[in-house]
Image 1 (tube, one colour):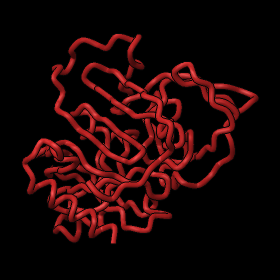
Image 2 (cartoon, helix red, strand yellow):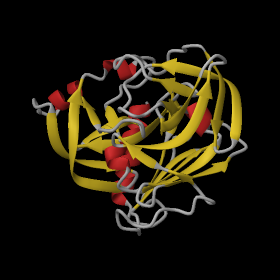
Image 3 (tube, helix red, strand yellow):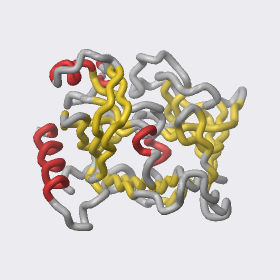
Length: 264
């Protein structure tokens, strides 16, 4: 049923030229991850939205159904009313990413697509917005009084945070993991499901706020130089606005937790 809803949403976005839907789409939460309707090479369905993934991925079974045998493709990518005409797409076996999901996961929309836009993500109800930036790449950085400074590490946006398990602590660049069921994700097996609990983190400091006793997961590779990743349980406390061109992340506190919306 969710797959049908995804196809309907994509059809509506493609058919409408009005400004109300341009650059926006409804999203929803499943298995702790943000899911969006999208299409790669015309293959429409449910895609994981993952700001902590450097590359956009297509499940090998979907690629085979589409007639592709290669593992490195260049295809159009459609998401949230925006289109990248020729994007690099890696074909992978994504069965491990689909553990615990009701609907088949066709692929992953990664940072290499999302960093082309100013991204807004609301969690209650869930809605993704993508706007073309007005500042050219390499333009002025943001005033740090109004936003967290973003540092691109290994192709993914990161912000400074500090974490402790009560015995030792780490600090440095943390990725924004919109596909993790925990509050914080540590580096783990590349094919490990991100929804499997792995204990409790004693404390996390982000943007001057201290959070305690957060659920943690240990799964998935992270780019070299990235300390860890902030999961949906932390990010859903805010409305996110990420501008990779000016290297700024605005976190607007939200009173409500994650919401579910299946309609645009």
